[in-house]
Image 1 (cartoon, rainbow over the protein chains, first blue to last red):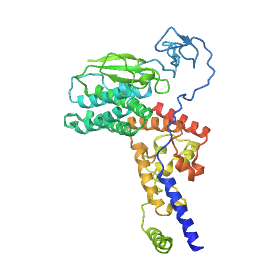
Image 2 (cartoon, rainbow over the protein chains, first blue to last red; image 1 turned 120 degrees about the horizontal axis):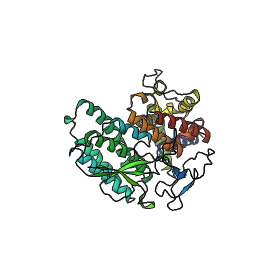
Image 3 (spheres, rainbow over the protein chains, first blue to last red; image 1 turned 135 degrees about the vertical axis):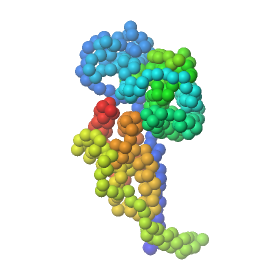
Image 4 (cartoon, rainbow over the protein chains, first blue to last red; image 1 turned 120 degrees about the vertical axis):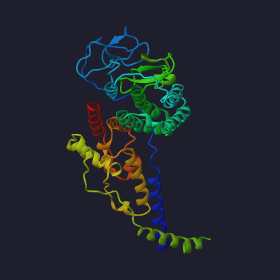
Amino acid sequence: MRNLKMNLLLIVLVAFTLSLTSCGSGSDNKATDKMENHEDDNMANMYACPMHPEITGKKGDKCSKCGMELQMKEGDGHGDHDHGDHEHGSSEMSETRTIEATTKKNSATSGIIDAYLQIKNGLASDDKVAAAQGGKALLGAFSKFDMSKLSGAQHKEYMDIMENAKEQAEHIVKSPIDHQREHFEVLSNDINDLITLLGTDKTLYRDFCPMINDGKGGIWLSETKEIKNPFMGSKMPTCGKIVKQIN
Amino acid sequence: MKRTLKKIILPILLIAFVGIQFIPTNRNQSDEILPSDITKVFEVPDNILQLLQNSCYDCHSNNTNYPWYNKIQPISWMLENHIQEGKEEVNFSRFGDYSTRKKKSKFKSIISQLKDGEMPLWSYTLIHRSAKLSEEERKMLVDWMQAQREAL
């Protein structure tokens, strides 16, 4: 009888242990349909496809050509509707504006940018492993970066960007591809701000994808003129457009 | 063979189990509300704070609410590691220390994990039934965080 009790105790303990150690592997069945705002918004033709402006409809409609959600037409947006305004569209990008927009010729950022582009190209070809390798390379590039040449003000801003970007890179190293893409969204803003802050001698293109960030859109950087969307991959490889050429 | 198991191994395990109960652990508990606490840097309505405390604070703040079974070793040790990891990801007691950039990206990650149902972890809600968020509560938290993120 006593042995039975002890066995039971052990079984309970083991069960508890297992239930606690199996943490962390949350399911990744990501719902693609984002929560939609079912506000009454019956204004027909007020919304247009960001890629095919001739396709119009009402809020929530999808483009018949590419399936993208229609967005409020430019010029019609009032108040808190800021869709389609590329430079100031997302809340993340408001940070971009506070930094003086000078693209200095600076080769010191090349290592970081190359690693970022490695992640970008991995994601554009739906290659999780390549993106993770890019993440590792980015962590390495940040640790090799020489901060001694930064001015006081630059230094603080750089530290903020670096800390955030490294965290995104760490997640890109260990996450499934849909999570990698979410972190890449944040990372793209960080790298964009880093370039605005410190400059680059590379020719880059700032591309805009209208579908990410809950339909508010967001940016990524590319070394090629050709659009290869890292957020959509093979689902919609050519979705997006160039908003700015750097150098 | 079966006899040795019962006569030797089980008593040893039992003694070890009792023994480890006396090894002290650093518990994640503090009454102090730091100036960097999320409630000090954001306007947090009571209902939102309640949700945060109930469903997030055990692993994402400086103050864990320990039920009796979490004070038993080795569960307690594993829990401490877990809490350490959770606090590294986001610590609501230190949220004010984060840069604006980091606050925004933290809000973004939290929102996305709430929407996908990844947080609170199922293994956690399995034991802490009360920490489970209803769809409505989930939406409340998401909406609040979205508003804070946009205002930053």
